[in-house]
Image (cartoon, rainbow, N blue to C red; front, side, top):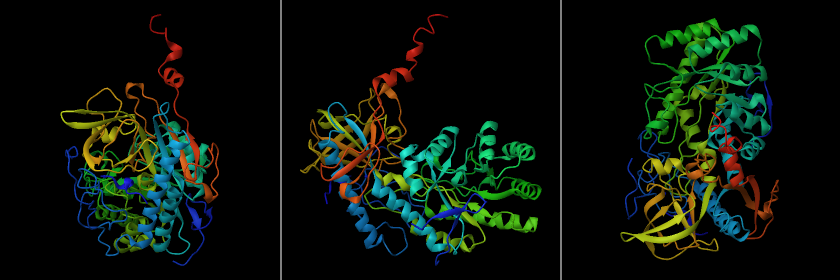
Length: 540
């Protein structure tokens, strides 16, 4: 296994139960990274520490060993199996980079490409299912719905669906993607703070679960339910107002968050009790308090507040009306090393300790994880077009920048990326570390994937890999300078039986690739930019 990748940051078939949650067969129960130097290993902090989980203190990602202990406070570390899985993932990545160069996916004509580790994604889905299977009572209905916003790509949604994962959608576009991928309505959840009447009517007609965001939206649903019966489970999103994490823009459970009904506001709790008493068809409760930068303890507190409210509602109405609790997602990702931390198992165990009643079989369960399922399994690989220096600083000018990593470029302190160096043949590069900048192609000075990063010197024709980019990176294109969207390819070892549409065959280290999304063409850029309406303004 190469060290390049650590450069500095089935539970069986499910069937519907008529309530929108699959029935499971019973089973035994910041600042820009500093110039030069390296920060210490990523510290995710104890469950109650409130520690920053963005990476190595929000500064330069750490070159710690694969599978380093995650600091989760569980006393068990990552475990030998997790360490081995992380090491295997790094080895697959190195093989895929070499194969992408050898097979021509990356070339002078196609100087940037995105890669997705298919076995890694499958393993994450299995880990999620297993973690919650372990803590839930036998027969508990559980739906794990992938947050489509994290990777709005039809082949990814289809892969996850095949692994038993549904879809959480927040727009008509995301719903269209999920439906195209074959995700059934009873495995789909609609969440959005700004649903139109048309969106609500479509969801209710299809039988998709809907979480109302606010009283006005609930009024809209009232009218629709009166005029046309629906099979859709309907819930209310609440904001438990437990506080934010280290990234303010992502914190969804602050006192003034735009999401849901603010539970601690004056009169809110009484209104919620009346809303359920007046609507026997309102059977779910939803909260999403997690996010990158959010400690597990605060996430668990949000879930505990939601559970307590469900219990209060059911006591108030005198029956088991709330039968399903949607705990959202938001498990943070360790961007500081190749170690997977925190894990789904750690979070599920913590929830079982803090909110044991959630798992005793009285409530169905929905989760909405996104980033944690995909991030570790994506790599953006870019050719070094030029190597230069300025003010004594080495600069590798690549074709990956703000168009694939807008969050990192505009908020590097919150979203530092690890960079791995590969040579012209796609092999992990060795040699003494040199402090250097990894620059993108856009025409502004801040277009940097990494600044002052210590790596083997990248030279013209080498390759720079931005790691942990499987979620919220290459699938969220930013069209600065009309830069083209890169091609995206899934990969797997050639001998694992994987086959798929668009596979390019084996070779190049025994790796097979399948097309996820073709590279964008110049013709598509022109069409997207009004090319067919070229004279429309001159005619006015």
